[in-house]
Length: 333
Length: 107
Image (cartoon, rainbow over all chains, first blue to last red; front, side, top):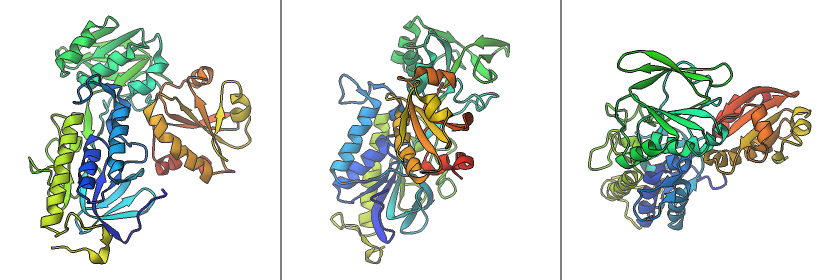
């Protein structure tokens, strides 16, 4: 990393994560002259939208926009107001002290009076036999990456939400047939996405269907399916399985220091973004079990930025015009 | 040495017949995580120069090689030693994780 900050500088605010919540928090704190540093992730920069295709519901883009393009625009906007962006991972975080200390993958450290956590969520696994072993050999979590390898083949998507519908529709460009496996007898997906999938003649829905096992020696050859009502089992011959059953909040870094909710998300004092530790704020999907949209993430990122502004002014007495300075200049209340 | 580009035509010569172990990155333009992994592999190539060759195979341009090794997920990094596939790693990973996975070869 070329622009690693020196360890004796204490920043006003560090943002961890680079999805819509992270970049929005950076844009707002940068415009408040808080000179934020944003740790974007070594290989996860841009977050979940980097693996999506067309985003049709983000306001302001009447014709839709590609996920990666939207994230590049957000990054550019954060840079425009002088956010420092580091393409590394936070591997350790001490959030209790002031300043808070973040250790990065390259061993360098960032000290900051306030931290905004926008670490999002990670793909959920099925937890069935064969899933791990055949990962990369027919089992996939990324339709846009891997659909290409299943040209004219019969494959399956498991999941009933919008991401599952989006993946299934995308995969019809390549596959001869896409089986959508839904655990219940209805979809969690929005009406428009569900209807689109049901109208597609390459897609066949299997209701009340769970995946019990992924089968195949070196690569996926079939799935053992189980009827979630009757318990009856049957085999479905497919060469690929795309898993889109949801996400788990990414809290490994902080779960021992902060209170989590029963859903595993970081607990915040709604409608604020305050966590159970002073100076630590959280926004986006890592706090949200329910809505999980790019626009709600961006919204809470904005909330967190303003909460940080007030925290720095009220609690630490940092004026909005005060530049980041050496540690000795810090002025805790 | 920087990363070399390998195709169906020269995979045998540059990877399988290589004296050094080779890390092969199967990738494509349209794969977001592949673009993320690119800079990580650049660093690995620079750091382990002389110990290992890092090569890239574009699966669009070299479908035969991708098919030969049963590639169905990218980015996929496969380690070859003495013409044999010895290890593989699926997905974009930060450098420390990648180096750890291939520690047998990178030493």
